[in-house]
Image 1: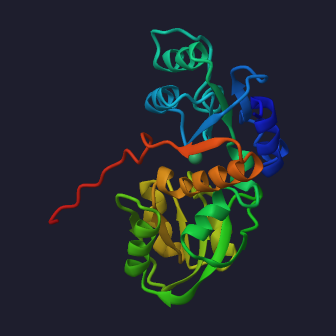
Image 2: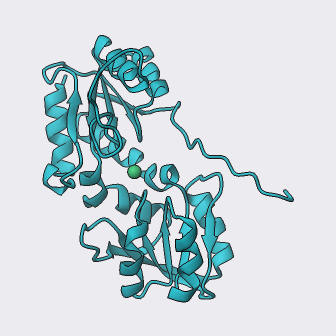
Length: 263
Ligand SMILES: [Zn+2]
């Protein structure tokens, strides 16, 4: 069976470490590199529920997108059982479960987060948007459609609980996508001649200014826009290591619910 180290090497062949942002923390972050692996759980995030699921299923390894520790939003100063993060890390370590995290390097990688996102929406001729980090993709719909219809399509294609959107009056045809919080790349989408930008974690003012800037904005949620990459990770790992059992976490789902008045 492959070791954690060998699986990390294979994942870096898919999404080279050099692609990660300097503030990021990617690769094998937790556990024993020489541990041999029979079962892998794949999830967007390593939550307490995902850790429990991996342990109960006899996994030696969790492969996630978001880093389990020490990136921008999760500095680790202590590992104590009386903090939520410490509790999680201790639980994984005590159960000999390793964590490999492929974050911004997987966002930019060909076949990574944003290619999977563009494919989930069925965008034709997907290619790089040209943003400085190389994160976003741009493609076209087979034929233009009204924003309302496209919003429904995005919601269904991504299995989201709902989407938020604001229109500029244009039909949807040339679409830019950025999985997760890519709102900062809106101007690149406009410069590339896109009528529509689909991303996540957008704020009030960005929606308010969209009409004036001449772009339709759709916020389809962080989880739904990044989740398509999990299936890609599973098929890649299964291809590289046919002897491994690789499965998608069943416990990690979108947590955000929408209440819509009048429904
Ligand atoms: Zn993300």
